[in-house]
Image 1 (tube, helix red, strand yellow):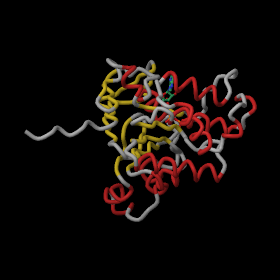
Image 2 (cartoon, helix red, strand yellow):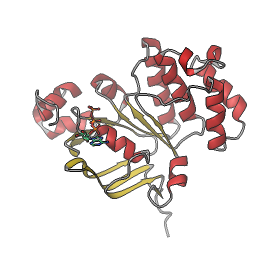
Image 3 (tube, helix red, strand yellow):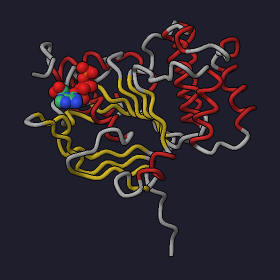
Amino acid sequence: MTDAAPPPTLALSGVTKRYGSVTAIDALDLTVAAGEVLGLVGPNGAGKTTTLRAIAGIVRPSAGRIAIAGVDLATHPVDAKRRLAFIPDEPHLFDYLTVREHCRFVARLYDVADAEPRIDALLDELELGAKRDALPGELSRGMKQKLAVACALLHDPALLVLDEPLTGLDPVAIRRMKGLVRALAARGTAVILSSHLLTLVEELCDRVLLLRSGRPVAIGSLAELGALRPEFAGRSLEDVFIALVGEDATER
Ligand code: ATP
């Protein structure tokens, strides 16, 4: 008997989310493997954030199943959520906890072993060491984003979910963030990120999922998307996006 292959780090099957008469995600099937970086792109209102929030367990799908490293999010929510970290575009921080206290709080929630040295190392790596005793109100927008990243990485998640990860970061921090995503993927972390910055997606992602009205319009590497239609060969993701979605892209 051969060993069964491990489950993909992220698996969506038939995931649908309806808000009244609006179908934000429409029967979406998707897998992301360990070490893979998948980019989610699409016009405003295409369903990107809803998809990421469903994967993070914040939004409950109207239908379909989501599994994180083989653990069903609906039936085993705590176990599944332990295996992922979600960084929204606007980090949610506690006004009354310092940078270090945020990290300690998250470390306790996730039962992180050796939390103190890990917190120190992460804060230094993210250049927040000098701000460890500052409250969120004393941090710049980019620093708040970095704190959210530190909190997300403390428990070494199998899946990292990023919504517009570069919002508010300066050029040096952008380069570091890209390096961090690559390093995490090289260590086997699966990453799914949503962004309108198509050059970032092109640079970082192994595959891209183009969503429109909650449905996939195309999925694959840029080379595979190029093979889809000969006129895409050698074109940028921006060219492919405009060709597939059109100039007047915002969802109605
Ligand atoms: P953007 O690029 O503008 O951030 P998006 O692709 O992330 O867009 P979503 O925020 O997922 O899009 O929205 C998808 C659809 O679902 C839109 O029609 C939006 O109005 C609707 N929607 C999202 N959240 C809610 C909600 N809480 N209640 C009602 N409708 C919602």
